Image 1 (cartoon, rainbow, N blue to C red):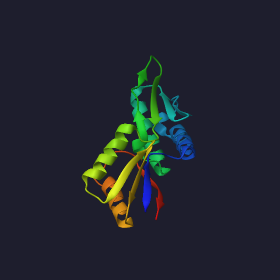
Image 2: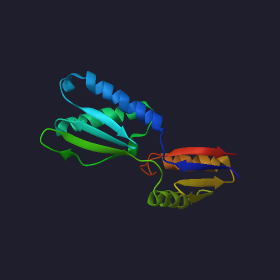
Image 3: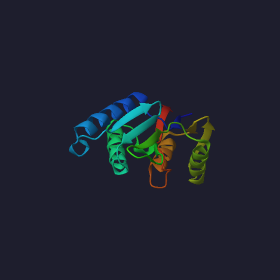
Image 4: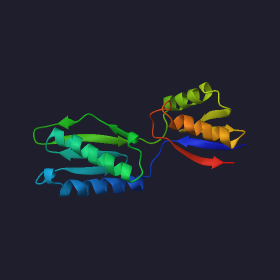
Amino acid sequence: MPSFDIVSEFDSHEATNAVDQANREIQSRFDFRGVKAQYTLEGERVQIEAEVDFQLQQMIDVLRAKLIARGIDARCMDIQEPELSGVKARQAVDLKQGLEQEDAKRIVKLLKGAKLKVQPAIQGDKVRVSGKKRDDLQEAIALLKGEDGPDLPLQYTNFRD
């Protein structure tokens, strides 16, 4: 019986490369000349430091562009509130991996509500979808990628015939 898995993950090596590229771009940009600004990757959290808060938003935009260029979905970014002190502004960006239970339930509900001939099942931090025909599985993927699908960074792996 054909099946595939719905997961939400990214390559941590590519995330490291994206942060390094963002650091290099910030160091070479004219509007950041003479400003102490940097990105630091700590596990799945990117710490952003700058001198003032408006620079933080510019740095987040640079990081988002670099993540997208490295093939990482920007929807995995969970941007925290900025911490402002006298001479320094900080902000954390968490890079989320794995489907939370509520998100997995919404995906299952969406697939069942669409009356497709597939059987979704939650297995830990992924959703396995199986069906009798490959075309049914492709319809399920198209539904999740469409406008009615969840606003999550989803990947479709382990496709078996």
